[in-house]
Image (cartoon, rainbow, N blue to C red):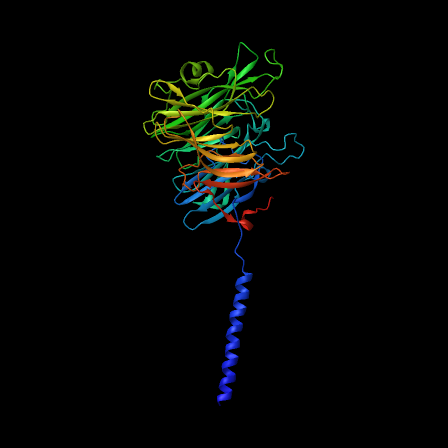
Length: 472
């Protein structure tokens, strides 16, 4: 009997040891899932930009982001800051652009999505346009070029998995910019055609089910003194209360053959302007609260809305924000004449309205690069900037001023990569500290980009497997 018990005890010990050994083998083979700094790898071309905005919105604990994906179609993803869960990206529509293999310019890049969430929780994007084509009909507010401006809405509130494209905005739009006011009114701003077109807005008071007809606010018109046409590049954003604020520069749209510049039409822009739209009264005003006649002409802009005359250097991409008292701060990229090229060294210049006049900040030590501005007070302002160091390191960083732009100091670097460069979005609407800006990093030898969501602690990570999207 004792012998049997001893044999049983020995067998039991071996069984337990075996189980522990097997458990150890299982645990050792169950490797921790690898994570990536990026949330998707199918950003396409210049997948995000400052001008088409917002590309992201923080709403009820979740950040929603949109970007240009494969074949220039719009994609939307979301991140839950409580559960740490990513969803998507889901294709939210089909762009008319990016599908023609015979087109000389393979990637147009003008139809990147702007994103907005209405008061009922439905998610909206505007995308796909570069002025429309003659097949779309007559453009009474400008000329034609390519694509169709389209409006897609999520089929369910706060659900990015299924979308419906609606036929309720002008097809001639490009550079879409969405704004929602506190009363729920939605505004879609865009250029109504190619370069020689008015800038307009369409307003919706029913959560985007319908939009009013386009209303012009910047006027294109033929010059009489030179062979060119007036054109514009505005950047539109929420101000305080009922205000919408606008920073803009002037594009001298020269004829292809002209006596003034033998290079013909080139991406030449000058000057920096500012104005605001009181959506409650319907009035447009300059910084001195003087009324502006709409649509604004070049002559009236020079007289009433000029922040800084920049005649010799070229300007690119104005941005603006206001302090709690409503005083604006405005930035614009400034660089030398780059001829027929569309890119060159550009450094941000900063201007602050002190209640009496525009004061220019000192940004001479900031690196060249594109960025967005966040104004916390008259004295406290930050610029989020993409740049490249002398050591060929691409950086996304924040530069801070505590003296109204008189000086800027380098703050945290949110992302850096050797031998790389980035495209960045405007700041996310109502951002969570962990998710302030969207960034695309080019994949060497391809047209694709890795997409990052950056905040104060750097990029928000994701399972590497789920971040690798099928580029369909």
